[in-house]
Image 1 (spheres, helix red, strand yellow):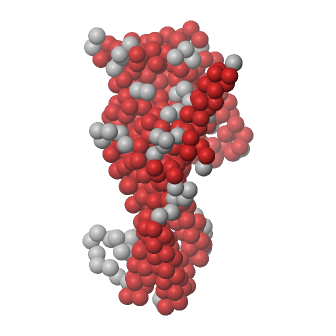
Image 2: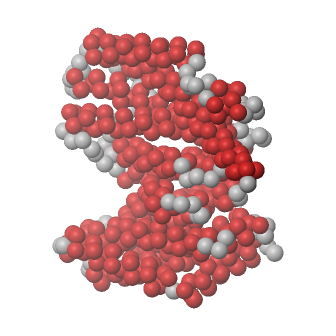
Image 3: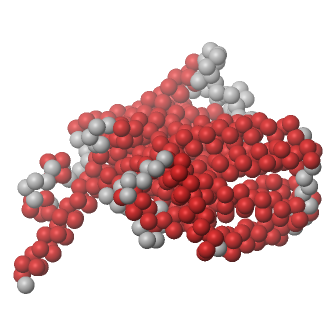
Length: 257
Length: 227
């Protein structure tokens, strides 16, 4: 890249042409292997459910994706807080927050699509106005809004400050939305694994398949997160350099006159 | 100058601008009224309209809220007034409360007009027993909407594409207000046999919402406009 060679002060990271490293390649490999495992257990080894029959297999994707999406949004909120309240306002945390929200939005989309398919098979309808579904849909839209705020423009620190405030406001918004929709109505199947009061009541092999699902999607999340964070760092760098190059070009023009 | 006095000054300034420009009176209120007429065309049945009247009032309020918020921040950003306020060292919390107060006054007028439209157009009825619940609901919902509107309006102010971004940001956040205020007004009006006592838990929700975003907005508004 000639651009970078011209500027001896450009950060070293920019000299890499890809966002991959040895670590991400290993992680990617582990993700592929565990996904293959998930396919084998989810579609093959695990039994069909007594009530839900084959449709139960959808849950090995549906449940892990929403758990990891929640994790992703928690990471977004934490990284936003570190950016906003940290002493040196590191843009790295802002990019981490943004990348995590992007992956979270994709995972929620998967949850909603797969969940509505499951609903069609089990309940006979794609959608029900039940608290968890409705909250999840609003969560999805809220974080699309968050990503839109990130694209408003301005300097990197303006973007970081605005989006971190929005990322933290979601912590206020989501419980309120959930509470209000819950007051409004309730139909959804009660949580089976994350039921705070009860023991886990599931077939062993099914539980293991779900576990494989959680592991696979966690690996996928971390892998995507690392790549997206680095890609965003490169985009920011490109923005900065683009400005420098434009300034140099104008100066050269002025010098030529 | 005390913070309370600055809040009053900013709110008075916004309302004075409105008194001179009459944008809300001449454009937003007619827009809200025509929305109510359009709902009538779409639903085309007096039974259905009477049943859904409270929900339509609040939907029309939310649509108009977006227009009001755009207006509230257009007057700040057009001449760089918001920047000038910040450069002058005005406390951002006071700006937030001042803008929110002015917005709340305009919203309250709007809600009363919409409610009157629902009584006239949709055949909804107010009973003496429901008046207290109705007024409390209007106050609580207005406070919450004004806080959220000011917060997100301030965020989007001065950026390209704010007109399209604002609805996307605001609607998911105010979903609790739409749910709570609609149920509370249904109880107050006795829609579909709802009892007045059923409405009070919803007012609780609206109050919690207003307090949460009042506090959240006070904390967040400074970092948002301080650029």
